[in-house]
Length: 165
Image (cartoon, rainbow, N blue to C red):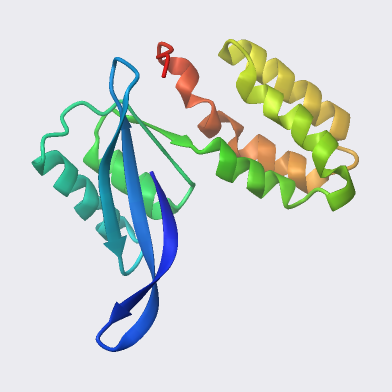
């Protein structure tokens, strides 16, 4: 799930509002848009209400929810989908990491960073991440600390069988 911010007319005013898009993945690998919902605020309560709507419409089995690391989403996932895993979106996570890398070095660093999530299994991904952290820690300490702090949350997909989509 992700949000985009759009200008919305509300009682003769134009306001920025989060529009959440929730996409599901079926066991056969097909994707399905489950919801496109506006939210006045991003909070645990608003995410829980969105998840309740999805369950009321028939969502039964949820194993993995991928989103940015907004604390409201993470809390709502843990309460609404008991037993489901939450994964930090690698695109958002990479953006958080790259915010600490100088512009001239981003292309080189990004190429190496992407390899973590392209590994065939968890152990290989961790080995690749550790190699990257050792190589760049002295140059980009804040980037490496960000990677260390969120890496495990970004690798949850390795706990599931691969679905070709």
